[in-house]
Length: 342
Image 1 (cartoon, rainbow, N blue to C red):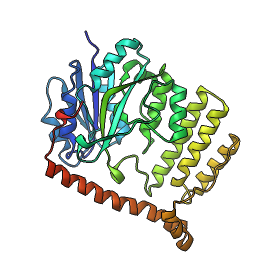
Image 2: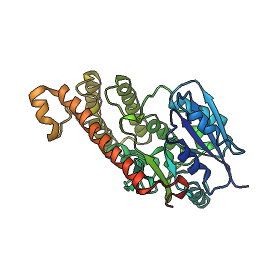
Image 3: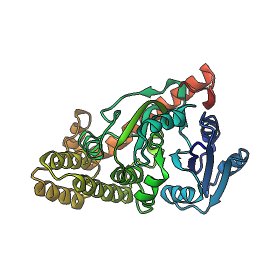
Image 4: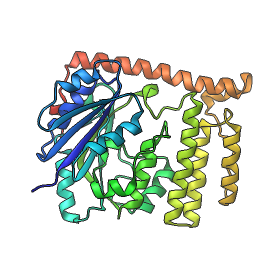
């Protein structure tokens, strides 16, 4: 018997995207699969749409709204798979995504190997997704993976992973206290429990960019700032538990400096904590500089006004680009998720 793979889809107000996401899950060429959708108290037609797909291997559940992490935990509690494929309700997979990773698993023969794959960004036109390789797109040890992620400010998209049940159980549940970066923190724990990452380039995921609607978008939310700060502290602890060295300390300091733009000047207390941590690590965190586009606003009207412009102007540009991409989708004709390029 081939291993059963559970495709777990948390969904909240995803009526616009869920059909294509479910089609991409159903179209997986790996036959031994179950698909579990957990509706997190949606107020639109998400649950009704999901119900239309119910079958022998597609099961749909609903709960009161509890947030993404709690919904993922619920989905895992309901699954029976030997392997877990996390899939957000607006993302897509190429038909051979799971099969190619399972084939790679046959060659490494370890349930503690964490499988990753390539992923590309898109807005509306999945067939126009941009795949941009990073230094994480290769086989890596857990410590090397975290060093690159934190030192270079890069990441792997959630659906790019395929995780054994053994690894999933060893990592523990998703942290329901984290309103943002819950996936980053969760996969740190998966990495720590693993014996390394095996990268499978032909395994492709299509990540729909949501802009300010994304759960990871911090914006002006103080709760998300606090969640991000907690996740960052956990990240540094995880990396240092694997290795305590000059290169690890340097990566932690760089990681702190990169993210201070989201905390200064709104949360001086967190900025000062970061400065102290950096000093303890033998480095320094300074006031994050503004690009030339916003530095003149800082000089004339102050940092708070400059930060406000830094939030608003990219969102305006994003809205225009997103609208144009939607227009192109209708002009060029919509392609179904089942016809995604392999």
